[in-house]
Amino acid sequence: MDIHKNGFKLKEMYRETVKNLLVDQGEFSIEIKDTQEDIAPIKGVAVVALTSKDQVLLIQKQDQKSNEGLEIPSDNLQSGEEPALAAKRILKDETGYLATSVKEIALCYSDSVRKDKIFQIFWAKDVILDSEVPGDSVNLFTLKEIDTMLSSFELKDEKTIVGLVLVMSLSGD
Image (cartoon, rainbow, N blue to C red):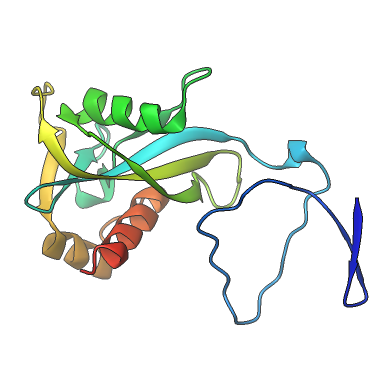
């Protein structure tokens, strides 16, 4: 369906509810996709998890030993899996922690250049340890430590940075 507004002819591309849309009021450009196939599907889920003591869980990726290798728990969606349930599964599988509820906070490309995979990012509060995960891959950080890592550019993973910045702003820290 074509829509005419303010002298512009627009093509309707999406007709569903849009949640949590932020619009920058400055100058910007919009890239319009011609077909649904051009838009990357949600293929992954990531979780910013906080304990009741406001400690953030980060995973140390096996191939990196510095803070640059720290990421929020994330993985691919399984076929037919609901993203919120996937978030709980991924958190448990990667950290041994359980989330009673999760809240969607963002969508983020896994690679801002290729734009071939979108992660749906969730926030889980008051997670509790259910079982230990083998290895030293799970790390707990205070919000102050996270703030320091973000402001000193120690963290490099895009979905991790986006998720942590949003959770810190939403939690008032």
